[in-house]
Length: 275
Image: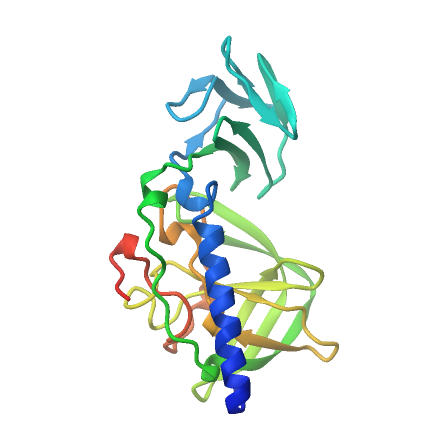
């Protein structure tokens, strides 16, 4: 069911969307945001050196480690480290940021693999960023749905922007809703905050006006009766829409919507998108 708004509400709705959009852009283009990434380095047991990070890096049963050269140092959790430093075993989708001068060295685990992903404020992708095209906000893309929890979270394996990589999420349930007169449903993954949800999806605009591989929508915690609001105006690009140095998950097969969701962020200019 579409949410109806008065003229006054519409003005507030548009202003709220603009504030959300600006916040998205600020986080993306922050000095150490995703546009600042200069490399995606996969670790194994062989110590490796990278042109955009100090030291030699490897991973083994004890987790990620680095051996810094004389005169090199990192700041980890506020502490300066020199020589050999162990970051330990990282959880899936977890990570640690190590500060190196004006750069941040992201140490993380993605798809069961340990990675090093340096972020430099002067990265060309970041310094040239001119903003993300987006559809104008429209209340018709705000719909009420019904969340139904599964009896138990369902392990759901999805592909990734990196060929051969897989991500596994414990899907807590699904959201059913109507859009353009069609009954639709999306498998939901855990989101931010208590009870929050996140859905990954594609639709009939994908590869036409919106990024082909995926878009993401954050949902608030459902009400006690399962009611949840889906505001597709806030459908966002994942980092892989801007850079090949991202490991973003792809939507599960059932989240490919047959309708054209002409709302939210469009194909970035970095991928040939237009306003």
